[in-house]
Length: 336
Picture (cartoon, rainbow, N blue to C red):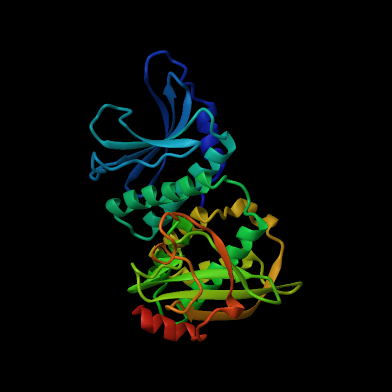
């Protein structure tokens, strides 16, 4: 659960980092387990920051720290005491409101991990993972999802729930969800992958393919294309409803809960935007088709020499291939 924003805002408002001498001004906050926390400002740029002190673990010097349009993660040592400190710092061009929301969410994730008994090394990975999810969120514009992206996320969540219901452990299923991280396919399961396409169309099933690699099975086999047909209704489930149900399903697994929050954020879903997703949907059908030689597709090995990039659209209603049950597809993938 996110920490209250007042905790950070009051601390930042009481600090001044406009000292011409470089350094940190900070106020201690309640710790997250063994991780020390401080709200700070850095001189001379007066940037707001959250400082995190890890007593006994540290990142490798070669590890690249996440940074986004509105923030950066830096190595810091406010006391010059040798303890490993990281600073999540707002950049001058970054939104103060959004940075505050990010700080609340990231620290809340650390609180949840500490409450679940996570060790210090795990807490460090949770911090990096959550900041990485915010990095993706900001890279994608940090705005509410477009109507098309909303439909796409509903489709992916529908399949994610079906994968869990078929017997794949929640943490494994969520970790396999690669779409929010710009994976080539939406799910990487077992030895293969699943690409998900969702539509509201009642006639035909238009599926936009964004690259030559998306339906290429030369790297991961087998490859399935999941078609999720939805109907917009008055009494169906909204996107926030589906997310709440998925969170409820995963709540007994701390790893799954943490991963799910990270993937949703990376996919562009921010809880503060929930009231913007008022549309309700009912599931009309889910189909799973294995992408074989006779499936209509363009891949790097099936286009004329010289073509290096392409986007196209197919109609799944006219595509070759038998519809198989999700559980049977997962068995063939080696996921169950």
